[in-house]
Amino acid sequence: MYQQGAQAYQQTTKAVENPRERESALLMKAAAGIQRVKDEWETGTREELKVALTFNRKLWTIFMSSVTKEDSPLPHEIRQNIANLGLFILNETREILLEPAPAAQRLDVLVRLNRQIATGLRGS
Image (cartoon, one colour):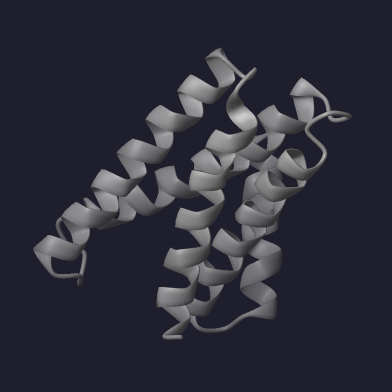
């Protein structure tokens, strides 16, 4: 699993030069994967849910790790906001994996957050 996430990150890195654009593209990819699971909720599998949420969780873990480093160039408030969002996403992901039955609607929150952050990174 980790290998797949790293490979996806490297492939996206090659296609996109700017780090903010890269991060935006990865967030959009994660959002699309979660949205696909939601759209196919009735016919999808638990494994597809797990794969989509794992990719998103790994991505947010990387973001959180990056903003909590001493040498992060971001202002403290932004770093704190990203860390808080990341914690929310990790907790929500855990809850969805533990109790997937009502998760279809809960996936919307993860998709919306990823898309909003991606849009912000693009400056749109």
